[in-house]
Length: 283
Image (cartoon, rainbow, N blue to C red; front, side, top):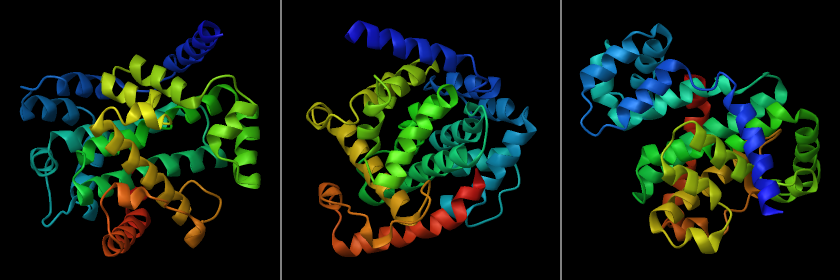
């Protein structure tokens, strides 16, 4: 049974890997970033050869999300202002729309949830200092990538799952078992592995819903907790949902697990709401 499930996941992941998911520039940037001694000049030359990516980098560098306090006018200034980890996050986020085979209402909601989770996770990580904010951004961006692939390859089946989630308030991980014989997390882990992301990200996805396993590694546990709270924030403000959940969204013990008191949560929630209203358009 496990072997058959693994083969099915691999089969779907192979289909996904044939899509124009990560542009050549993105792949090259990720490869360069794997070198701890990479120079800013190399990164600048690579990004500078892509006019669209250059424009995006300058736009984000000048945004309130990254605390811009002066006008950034060239790529060198942008990279120095953002830092290499943030540059990696922006490059990956900018390329993510290449994942989608189509872009209707379902895809729009998925995209909003994915980028919303990334932005909120980054802010939560900054506030709590329990993980690198850019690790949180990438984790938020990719932790549900399996949903995108399922929607690409099995749109009718995926629509049935989402109907259960939206209409009957059934958690996604429960609804997907009624339709699929493998989880989107395991599929997502296979996909990020094939895209060449670090093993820690693959492990994050594989163990995301297994509290006992994820607690064995404190940093991964912190990341999962941060991203889970980010997802709840998306639900609260309607990012990737048909309507905002508002005060009906329960944060449970997530704030406590992250060491956030009531005042800090109020401040963080307000910051995330502002970011959702301004930051989504950046991508």
